[in-house]
Every structure is written in structure tokens, then in C-alpha cells.
Image 1 (tube, helix red, strand yellow):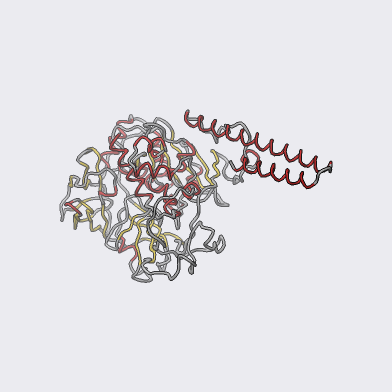
Image 2 (tube, one colour):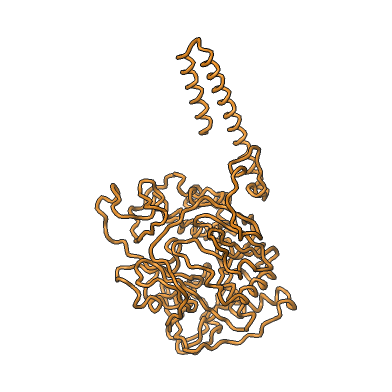
Length: 540
């Protein structure tokens, strides 16, 4: 449409030049030249429209229009090839332009130190679709070993949720309507592990491996898309995806996760390769000047894919979309690096090692750092003597998609980061008229302060919820062929068919976290996406 407007403007301008230069042969040539140029632009616009329609049809039939260069006329990407790092040799390369990096103060630095944590917990609410009151298999005062079952879902009793540490069960916390919120364990100084008889993965069929993972507590480490749930015991994924890097604000360096665990990492990949009808895909970081850890680049039994671009390039959902999108009723499994390592160590040792390297981040910490602990570690003990003030918000995860918690809370089951922010409960005079303090934003009205500037953020949203306006902001930061604003409206109107047609199956909360960040209307986009996924799950 913009090309057509340009063409009409050029025609109008040529007519003015012609009227002012009657009898001048040079002006006539200019007029004819401009008319010819307009005709050429018009033809180019028509061919561009035809190319877009062709790509839409190709996507309907499962053809990757970008990868296969489907179209009638060449695009800019056909002439300009993005820089591919020299170390990204094996595997496909994906250059993403949409997105936004939020640079904040308080990144974790240095090596990994041992955290002094004594209390750990497993929370049933960390698992979507879990019964609010699962069957608890322990009582207060009982002694457990790492890997002993703590509870199971009454709807799927075969799946065991196990203790991350050995010690004494000191508390079973309850929430609304007597729901189970935390099973708290006071850990032993020296870990004791429940010993499992490990099957030989090359002599056991898939059913045998699945049965072992169900009973040993490994099965909940797997996340199934769509819906972000622990997979059904009969589920066979078309693909398994693992992102080896994170682009979220203050995200930890995943290379530290695999350091010293190279054998367990590869063993975990080999196990996962036997559980899918397709392939295991790993997303590799192509943003830096140096290659990721050798454990990642030299992995085998996997398909490798390099990604370069701003956040959310490190999100596994974005990588799935650009490699093998979820279609129809397909199921795809996703895991984090540390979950893969835990699976590998179980198959190597017969013990459930729930070790976690956690990044303690945020400008409200006096010493942002990396610590080694276990799943479900106490938040209070992790940040003890490290806070610069009392008026702070604790987040289990990153600032975009993490969950707000309290000092007496515990690290989320799959989280590897804690972020501490200043609570934004103060008011900025005329902040709506003249931003007085630096703040992260994609708006051109807010100074950028340079690409190397790190912001000290707080939780103030600088506005309140308003009506949804279709502005194109969501699309500018979501590198997926999806119309997120239209999808949000379909969810709010409970239009199930339109939800599916607009690609809800491909999304989860973290994929649209940036959309929520840039939203002028201040809408809870992540909560809306979860609302849609839950509604879609009920209909499936």
C-alpha cells in the first residue's frame, strides 16, 4: 500500500513539473521517466502482494517459506546475507531481527560458589494441569532420600514427583481450599540418594525407558507443548527441543550449567533421542564472538541450529517456530540444559541429582553472583545478607516471565535465576509528560542512553490498563509469523476456532513476555495467553 501511495505521489509531482515546463523537451523526458518509474513500482508492488499470498499458501501446506525462499520477486534478504560467525559451521543458521534486548543493572558475574541452603521444597502448583490436592506420600517428621516420591497426581498416578534432597519433611504448606502449596524438607548435611536399577538404553525398548523415568522422578523434568504440561505417559513427541542459551534480561550463562557435566549432558541427549519419533534439536548461541561450550557444539545424536538476534531469540518456542513449527495435534517436548543433565546423571549413576546453578541477579543485590544449590531452594537463604534494602520485589525467574515470590518462598521447579527489583510503589511527578528517570523502553520518546547503558529498573508500570489498540507493537518484538494482538482478542472473546487458527498452539507465556512489556494498553498478555491455552486444553 505504501508503494502504491508513493507511485501516485510521483505521478502527481510529475504533472506539476510538466505544467511548469511547457514546451521544454527535457521536462517531457523527465515526465515520461517518472511515469515509467511509477509503473515499475506498481508492478513491483503487485508482484510483492502475489509473493506474500504464495508464502501464506506454502505455510498452510507445511513448507518453510523463508528457508525455501518461496516467492515471485527477490526480497532484501536475498541480496544481503547476515553475518554468520566462523564457529557456526555445523547446522542451520537463523538471523532474527525482531525483538528487543532489555539491559539491566545487576548481572551475575564470576564463578560458581556453593550456596548455604538448608530448606528445599517441591510445589505442585509449578506443574500446569496438576490436581490442586495431589496424593501426598509423606508426612511431617518423615525422613526421605533424594529421589524418594513426595506426591503424585491422582489423575496420573504413574508419574512420581520426587524429593530433590534427603532430609526431614518439616512442613506441608496449604493454600486456598486446602490445596498443597509446598512440601518443605530440611536437608541433611550429606546427601543420601535412593538407588535405582538403571536399564541399558540400547537393550531396552522405549516403553522400558519411559517406565523407568516415570518411577524415578525424571518424567516431570519434561515439558510438553502445547499447554506446557508434564507429558502424558503415552505421548510420543514429533520433536524434542533444547535451547542452550537464554536472552532474557540478566539471564544466566548456560555454559556454566554444563561445565563439569559434559558426560551427563551427552547421556541425557542420547536418552531423549530414543523417546521421539523425530529428532532432538538444540539451539546454539551465535550472538557472541566466541563459540559456546564444547559440550554444546560437539553434541551428537542431535540436529544443531544457530540463532542470532535480540531477545527472545533464546526462547525455545521461537526456535521451534523457525525450525519445525507445531502443527495440528502434534506434540513437542522441551527441556532446559540442567534438566537434560539431571536425566543423564540418573542414567549414569542411578541417583536423582537435582543440582542447580542459579544466577542471583538484580540491582538491589549487593553481590550478584552464581551459586550452586538444588531444585526448590529457599529464596530467603539464597539472598540472605545480600539485599541492599527492604523495599524490593523477589522474582523466581527473569523480570519478563518469572513469578513473583516472597522471602519465605522457594525456587521454581525449572527456574535457574532469581531477580531482585526495587518495588515501584512511588510516583514520578509528571512522569507521563516528561520522563525524568532513565527507563527501558522501545518508545522513541524515551532516550535510549546508548547501547551499552544498563538501566536500574523498578516494578512501576507507568500507567494503568486501557483498551486494546491495534498498534503493531506486539508484532515488532515477536519474531514469529503470528498476529498476537488479534490472538489476544480471540482469547478474550473465547473464540476457540480463531485461537487455533491464529497459532495459539505455538505459544506459551514467555514467548509473549516482550509483547506485554511494550504494550501501551498495559494488558496482562501472558495471563491472557495462559487463559487461552487452558480453554483450548479443555476442548482438546
